[in-house]
Length: 217
Image (tube, rainbow, N blue to C red):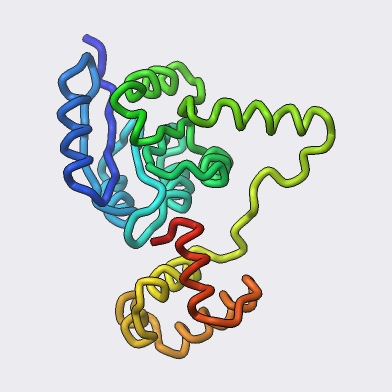
């Protein structure tokens, strides 16, 4: 008897996870072995689960999707990662693939493309939502001509700075951020200063605008 293909679902929206579970477990040899609400819960599950595929979102509480990809590959090098997200920014696609994801599926395409994405990944291929096809071809053409410079704008912030920035953009005070992240107010203020210096910003409202543009909130 063929072993089931073990899938771990990670999304901070419980309805999304429940919907995916119902779809996946009603077909063939796919088995959902666990669910996680965020990146930290994912790491806890990986201590006693060995999934073949981890399906996760880009933006989740505590540990973001890109950082989570690195952690998955550290703990279970053979496990594959499929990003399932609403974010259409090409930057996130390239960052996810660079981090080791084997697929990038938009949530709006999931009803038609989910099984296709899983099938390709099981075959050792890479899956990308059709939405990006034309843009990727254009990028490759530019690179082939020698005029493709930097395809993506690399985010200069560390994972911790991105966490602090997200909370700043949500209107949290330095004291509230410190309590949420279990760090001192002094450390929060140092992170704030570092963020503003790296991004060359002078006002808090500019931090909020940057966080929105990057999809942190």
